[in-house]
Amino acid sequence: MAQPTTPTRIGLAGLAVMGQNLALNIAEKGFPISVYNRTTSKVDETVERAKLEGNLPLYGYHDPKSFVQSLQKPRVVIILVKAGAPVDQTIKTLSAYLEKGDCIIDGGNEWYENTERREKEVAELGLLYLGMGVSGGEEGARNGPSLMPGGSFEAYKYIEDIVLKVAAQVDSGPCVTYIGKGGSGNFVKMIHNGIEYGDMQLIAEAYDVLKSVGKLSNEELHSVFTEWNKGELLSFLIEITADIFSIKDDKGDGHLVDKVLDKTGMKGTGKWTVQQAAELSVPAPTIEASLDARFLSGLKEERVEAAKVFKSGGFVDLSTDEPIDKQKLIDDVRKALYAAKICSYAQGMNLIRAKSIEQGWDLKLGELARIWKGGCIIRAIFLDRIKKAYDRNPGLANLLVDPEFAKEIIDRQSAWRRVVCLAINSGISTPGMSASLAYFDSYRRDRLPANLVQAQRDYFGAHTYERVDIEGSYHTEWFKLAKQSRI
Figure 1: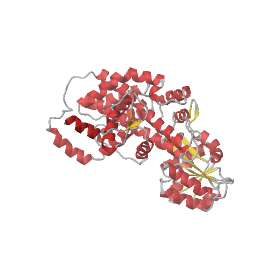
Figure 2: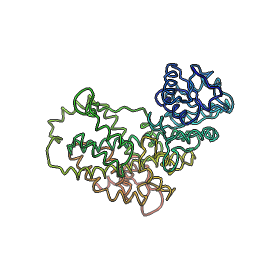
Figure 3: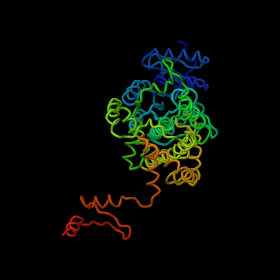
Figure 4: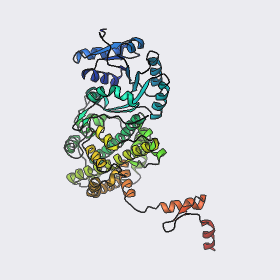
């Protein structure tokens, strides 16, 4: 294998799809890179790709020692391996050859506390550490991802020239910024993925209503999503959804989407997001509904049996041919999708803010919206509006109350309610849209029935309550008073 005549600028260990593509992206931007993988065939494969894709300055190594020694000092190594124990093992293998002042960057979807633990552990060896969220899938990694590096600022400065060129480029600059201290980069990427879960679920519900109630064909759905991608919903996920509806099945008749098993997989970041929402006492019902929808989709065999049980139970028959105004439905669903999406992003941003306050990270929400405008899976024109909302008011309590977003929701709420009601009456579940609507309706009300829940808590557990008219905490002997009133 050809070796460089001078030390390379950076190294990358872990050559699965994301690792290979990120390494080729770095090389293509003019930074000579060394690569290493425990399974050496992946090294050879990556070197071959570098030749085919333009004789890129990428050099492969079959052993960790020669890989590390090929790097210019201070050495910088990105690792892209499976989260958890494999990361610790890779760090152990590489750190045997690294020296004081060298830097390790974990580019995987890692739990933020693992990153903080590792930062402390490698600091004892004199090494610097970054946990860097990478979003954009294989296409983004190759051509320009959104990058979320957090941890040592000194380490970030080592790689700033590289990441500024490697990241996706949009009108407001490269889609990368130093996120903050500790595991903040991983945490922000985790919430990004939680928002992504919500987005995907809301789009799936829009599809379900249009297909099951509106009886739209795949050709019509392709046309609708293509049209939506020219307006306020312009985004990567809407674009790929339009594409999916156009793909014919290469193994049979009809469209491929109809042959895909309705059982959704997951890697864990959505679950972590929901667990963090509970830990931080931040409502995130849209993201939670999307996770539950994935769990329910996994019960395929049970659902098939349940469908038989309820077929004759007097439940709504989805095949009824009541006349429906297709164009009106398409328009309503578009508005409902947009309004529900605002709620999902509001929840994600509030989670980031709450964690930032808890950890003292001082995260800038507007800047996060900016670096998500390109490269990443949730990239959307709508993020520009979010950035402007936080620019207008950095202390904004919730995206819903930003004057522009508030007006947009007010303009769309009738359509949103119509879609949710139509879905309920048709026996179609829209958990994401319904949860978003309930979130909006709860948030906009100055009085909720929580007074009754608190009274119940005081009744059976003497948890006390506050009053709306007098300061202080109160406890009432509800049981005694109720008993007397029955006499």
